[in-house]
Image 1 (cartoon, rainbow, N blue to C red):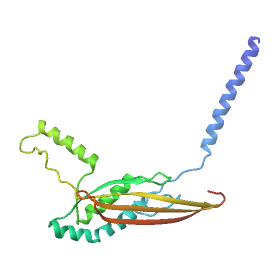
Image 2: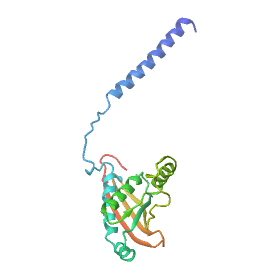
Image 3: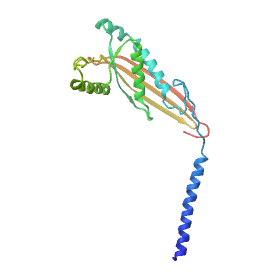
Length: 211
């Protein structure tokens, strides 16, 4: 291949690459436009039919309302002459989709604390962070402000559970069934003081395609 032919080939390759870059830029510029609208955080918006923030909030509100209305609470107060201390443990996601269980646990914690009917202690990770701070205070804080070891409040009950789902799909329709199971366990005796469940069922229709 002589130098003129090599130059021609190089020029063609350069032009091809340039054309591809230009085409991709044009395609990108011609894509669907996107708009963003701010809405209230508690507004119900269902797009995919998956578990969402509304499900998390409503299920937490309903199940905490139920657990606080059961006999265990009055029985504990009558027996111990004080308010029970509760902690939220693990809520496992046993569905096939991603569910932010941390957000659901925070919703449960908020409803319990704001009820004013139980006392509440920090979870395992939060306690360790606080312990690290307390350890740090032993060396750097003044004697008047120093927080002592072994003054933590132990929980009486742990709330724990899981989320399961069943999906049934045919053509352009899909039924999504969620079941949230929670149980309140006495930490000292392992006795289950309360078991609750909340079921959600959603019909999702999608025109023009199949699930």
